Image (cartoon, rainbow, N blue to C red; front, top):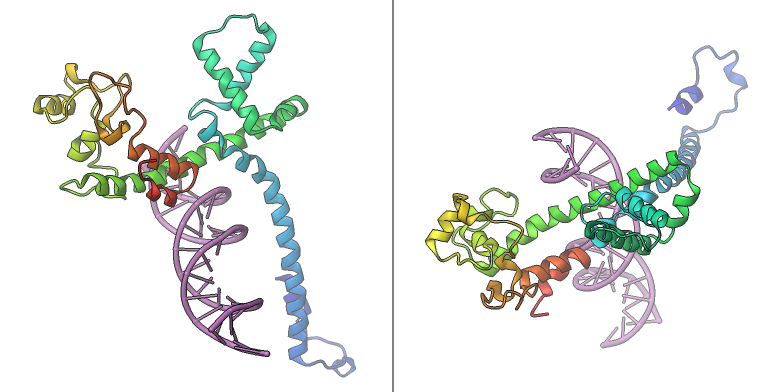
Length: 259
DNA sequence: CGTGTTTTGTTTACCTGAAT
DNA sequence: ATTCAGGTAAACAAAACACG
């Protein structure tokens, strides 16, 4: 740093005998003290700066968990504005109702947001949304990353697959794996049936897996009652473990036992 | 033997930066 | 846009320690 260089004794000193000698040790000590102070000041500046830029990011983290998994935040605001314009009598589609519920949750989660929208100018608002979104998406990324490892180990323990699932590699999962396939198989089909299994793996028209059916892993004991498809739904151990891993903590998931 | 205190270790949330 | 590796700090619990 410049401090150390400028304080170094220069070669052409007019009269060296006039300077009062201090011990190198005490000089070094003072220099260290000065540098320490400097570090403190720099640290404080940095913290303050970071807090400002980080505030919205950290506030945004919860959004994907408790408001909406994918919907852009702006869309929620826009829908709320639309409602205000049209009034409560204005009719709306199911999708719009869905957005509005999202907005209400968002307002609950971030109570300060409403005022901010009113008082910030468009430039600042855009900046705020960008940060909220960054926090929201990176939190989701963290969740999927931890779940990627955890789910693999859970399935290994729960289902004892013949070839264990690697926790660091998502290849060889899904329908190619027998254990995963059984869990992912739509509830109304039987994974035991070789025709079903082959049909799903080959993506035969009759066995296209879609979002219209619940996978087996969402049911209690991973088995659905064909006569009553709602029985035991959402009661599976894996599902609860996943929930706890995200909403309480990763390690709390191991305590799940018929909750 | 308690009983406070320090050290050490673990877990978790959060951030950064880079690759894809 | 998503995924990934890595790293930091806070919070907490457990272990080790000194001391009357």
